Each structure stands twice: as C-alpha cells, then as structure tokens.
Image (tube, rainbow, N blue to C red; front, side, top):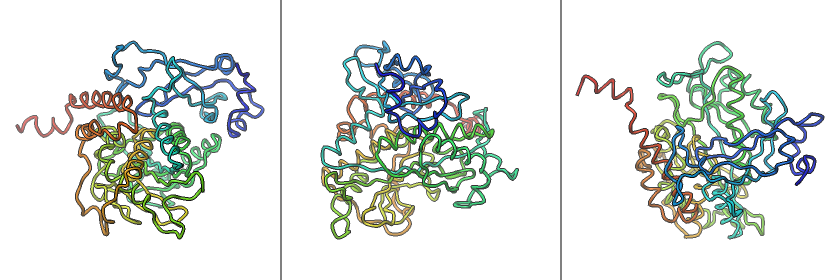
Length: 455
C-alpha cells in the first residue's frame, strides 16, 4: 500500500503547489453520476493513505435528478452492490473554498471482478475515446461553458432573476461581449480565476453572453477525458465562487424565460496519432473526406443523441429561434445560427463546433455522444448535406421538441448503443424515463392559470 508521500508523487504540480508547507487535512473521493453530480465521500488524509480503495453502491447511477430511483438494477434486483472506486491521481486538485487544506480526486468505478462499470459516465467516455485510438486517431475537444449568475432563489415557485451587479442595479440583458457588463461581476470572476489557478486550470477567456447575468468561460483544447474532468470540477468551482458573493451560479439550459439559454459548445478536431497532423486538413490545407464524414455523422446521429445532450424537460426550452441556440442540424462556415459551425481557422486548427449540447448535460456523456456521432460518420463514410448559406433560423426545425420524443429516438438508436455500450444506454433510458414520468405528474402554474376557470 503506497504511503502518502508516494501518492503525492503521482499528483499534478498544481495540487502539490497548493499544499506546499501545509498539512493536508482531507481528500474528497468523488465520481460523477448520470446527471454529473459529484458523489463520493470525504476521507481524512491519514486514512486515505492507509485505505487506497473505497466503495460506493452502484445505485448512485440509478438515481434521478429529483432523488428518486430508476428500476435499472437488472436481473439481480435492487440490492445496491458495492463498486470498487480507484483513484486517478492525475485528477487531484485543490478545493480552495474549504476551511482547511483539502484535495479532490476523481475515481473510476469497477465491479468486484475488476471490470469497469459500464454505465459510469467517465468510463463511457473512455470507451469512445479508445475506439478512436484503435483507428489511429486522437480526438481533441474544447468546451465552452455558459452559465448565469442569478439572485438567490429559495422558492421554486418564484421566477429566477439576474443577480445584482456591483453598481447596485440588476444585470441587464443584450450586452454581449460588454466589458462593463463583465466588470459588474468582477468580485465573482476574481474568485473564479483564483480558484481555477489554485486548481491548476487554464481559462482561455471569460466573456459576457447575451443573457442578463450570463457569462461564458472557454477552456483550452485537449484530451476529452481531461476536459470533461475540468468541466465537472468547474461547475462546482463556479458555484462556490458565486456563493461567496450571495448569489447562485446556475447551469440550467433555460433558467429565465425571456433570456437566451446556456450551452456547452463542443469544438472537435482529430489528430493522426502517427503523424500528428489534423485529419480534417489535407497536405495542401484543404478539407478532407474525414472532415465531411464527421459533420455528416453529427447530422445523422445527433437527433438520437439529443436525450443525452439535452437531458431534462427544461433543456428543450433552449432551442428557440433567434435566441442564440440552434433549431436544426444545418452546417455552415462562420455562422452561429447553424447547429454545426465551422469556425474560421488555419488548416492545422480546423475543427467542427457542435452547438447543440446544453450546459445542463453531464460533460462526460455530452462529449462521449458527440464524439460517437462523429465517429460513426467517419467509419461509415457518410456525406453531409450542402452547406447552409444565410440565416439557419429560416430553415426547417428538425430537433426533437421534447424529452419524450428524444428518449424514443435514443432508445431506437442501435448504432449509438453499440458505440456507447448497451448496458449504459439501458440504464440511462430507464433513469430518464423515470424522471420524465415524474415530471408529467406535475401540474404547472400555466395549467392552473389558463385552465382552472376556462375549460
């Protein structure tokens, strides 16, 4: 069993720098469940060194966002078998908002036969990345994180409102890219930067988006699993920074009815492992067949993957015409009205941007299904539609309109099931059906207002 000093040698420099000349008090052993919530246990550092493996019940992956359970346990029944959690020390990072010196470490889930738990989101993403590597391809991803800073809201019956800025006025909408608008949230942003630096994360930039109190953080491109880890950590980091300033950070896809929604745009490129070249660009810098195949894979298979990229009933409120969200799967160059955008770049940086994913999706699963769609396009040599020219909001709406329709498409997507793993797709579908069925039992204010005395 390794000592604490031996464990430290496997950790990133940022984690060690955070602990320099300090006593490590606690280690949080965390894992992402289906919604992307951090589950796990906090362990005193001295005990962590003595007990290098930990256990959690597999039922954490059957839990709905409301705390209920999907009947996904399988033939053995709901007996909550223990999973073996193994630490990935390369993910060790500070938890700088705590009162003592604490590290977080992401763990991977295994069964008692030492096989990966197939419905653990991080394992699903690893599975998809490995499929690429078997073809000699190294997938690269760069996520963009949109979120709102909102006033504290402890009453679910009340509408969510933008937070008060430092000027003493509520945040105003339609101030995209305004530096003054960013300055309104300066104290929160300062803490986000400080926390990110302590955790060893590199932020590519922060901008004001189109919504009132809506910000975007861009992360540097890299390995899909590492970037999913960062998004997983960043959600907690941003929430903690907001709480320090008496506001909430929310990653809901559509928290405020009149405002744009929040997306997790995913920029994809693929590197040839042998040559190091971008497979989307040819020797003379032109666009390759694989580039078009990847686009076609997104166009063909994203409708079946929407249930993962838009995982809640609220998610579908984001896909509204003229509200900075796509309504179809057209593709276009340098055109933000399209669901699939090709940004301006040099040939070596050529990439495909998936603008469909909501910020409410699990980052491991969102990246996994987006990569899976592109992979199927490349393997099956699919061809995309013609490039859309003009305002794509004038085109046909071809995204599922709600969670029920999306789940039906997901459940029938045999090719995606093969890529993601049939055990994962089974569990995911059952849990999401349970959530959706629960939602259908809720009587909304709209129904009471318009139906109570009128029908």
